[in-house]
Length: 63
Length: 279
Image (cartoon, rainbow over all chains, first blue to last red; front, side, top):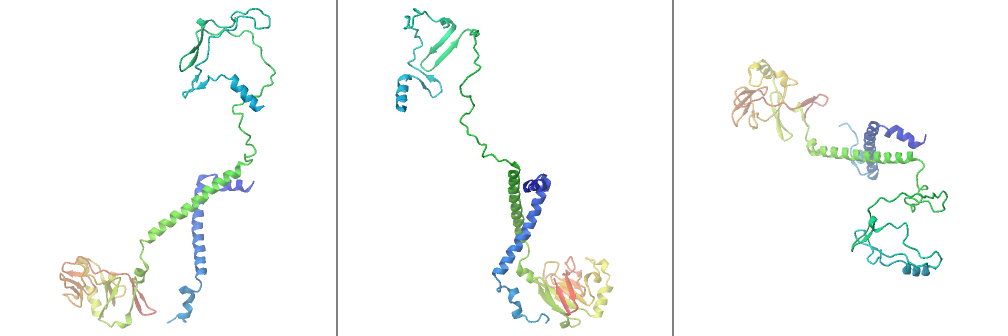
């Protein structure tokens, strides 16, 4: 039972399973893509965003 | 040798045969009436007559026109009686397409992996397409939602401790005036004791206020949208100067053309900070 046969039997044999897994994978891919892009953005702009420099201007929360 | 072969071919092959564009062979100089020579041609069987197996002229034969060469047979040919079957032969095996090479070395020996690869590619394409479609729809719908500057104005906070009893405060909320009245106990009693079931827009004071001493409502006349004047009118509440609508101390339409009571916005009390949050 090679990997390709396992893949075919698990996902592609029934069209219902195939389409369902495609939509599930699209959902997961969207979340993962968003997370990756956001992480990259935060790292690229580290020290420039308000959430990074907020503590310099607002010392105590209660007022 | 090659040159010799070419020479030999060009001498022996009749230059009269060619193919017309229609596919018909054209042989304009072909002589179909030649007969075998009448003498013995050097191997001693005497003069030979016409061949016995040559069909007579009435049985058919060749015909040559300017454009075609046709063979016509008017009789059924006699069955071949003497037939020598060749049980052993050395000629090459005739194939349909003898020039086709053997592709066996290019053929895969497992179609499973190829099938899986195709399904995986189609599935990946589907995943990407679904993501793009979902992203497009989401982005398009987000253009319909409120922008950040509108959301920033969506809530207004009012310090309740600054409003003395029996006074009106008008604040601006989402571009519209909002009346906040700190009602006195007598005003509350007046608003609650009114026979509200007979009003034009029947609504009790309990339905219109969360706390009886605080009345919060939109300062837009329900008739044509003027801003009513506070502490005026026949019922001690508000009076719209445009067309003379009278509202009572609970903001209910009592007189004049206004069809509905003054609208109540969404609001809530923040007791910890003593604030009223509208929106």
